[in-house]
Length: 140
Image 1 (tube, rainbow, N blue to C red):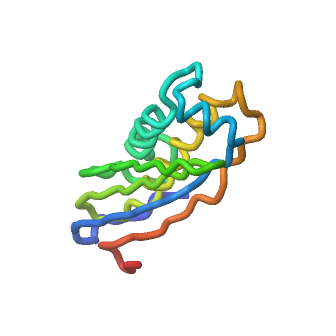
Image 2: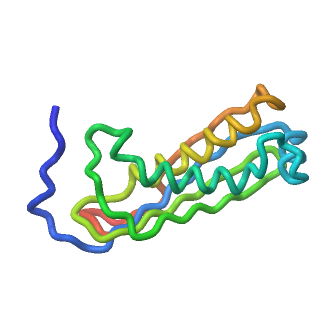
């Protein structure tokens, strides 16, 4: 096992965007909207958790390079029975930001689970995926 050598690659602006959802009961969504979750503001705390998760990625993933992050943005979309997070990560470096974006999404989703588990034991974290990337060998 080893990290991939990226020393030969050129630095350029790279971006990655990931999304993921957690399904909750409509009653839990209502409590979140009304600020009635005992631990506090679920959306704000989860957005912050997403930023921290993206920044801590190389500490969690053994083959990820510690790379400079210029921007981490986290958006939340609250539906009738779900919360969707979108995390975009940007920076100038020799390797991509896909894993950082996915870890940011997962951290935000897990934070929702942690904050709401006392009122909803049926939550399900759904598909987390990269929806956009640029600056590397393949852009899409």
